[in-house]
Image (cartoon, rainbow, N blue to C red; front, side, top):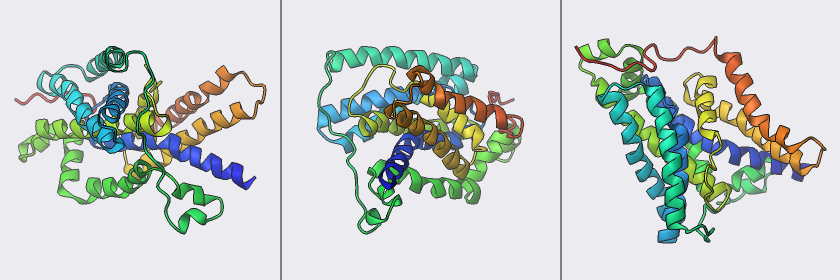
Length: 303
């Protein structure tokens, strides 16, 4: 029983980690007034580039760095069209998802030639003494990326609420024209928040391809980017809210796999739907109570 519970906790953390990382990036961009459904494409692109980077260099660390940098550059496409060209954010985000799907399929077949190569992935890092604790000891046998994701939560919370930089982001999201009047660059603030969100989404995608599994498969994100959007709404656009929302979805995904292993007789198609049903119910339940930034989705045109 204890072993089963420990395994379930470990699975929950691993499933929640990519949602948490991507969600923390969205804390910045969403609070700046950006609605980015292209996060799905960012994560997919990061998943491929992480595997490719690890394959080329033989190092998971360099693979992660390549995923972060390349996805940051990829996110610049979204930033340019939505900020500089005043294009509709939802339309551009949808286009980014389609573009990412096509690019990753093409690059995957060019780089790996239809094979599944052996790559370096994120290894477990055991924390002495803590790993010996009953039940929760398994939580201290995770990869470095898992630990980093949870450490980033208080850091992001502090930056957003206690620093001049974070307050600028909140001001831009609430009233970009007033922010511009007092000397805050709305364009630059939205640019760097999108790039940061792209970087963290790339790391989240790389974790899925190099931490949860050790290969890339076409379309492997399977809606996790949209779950990250649900996480930011459910979490009230705050770092600690994103943490708890990610864990809720992590429990749903871990439960899905656990029920499949137990051979309950429930059709696997229904079990596969479980995380998405939780997403839908959660978002519908808080949608009327959670208010995003006043300028969400609106381009800022300087007079």
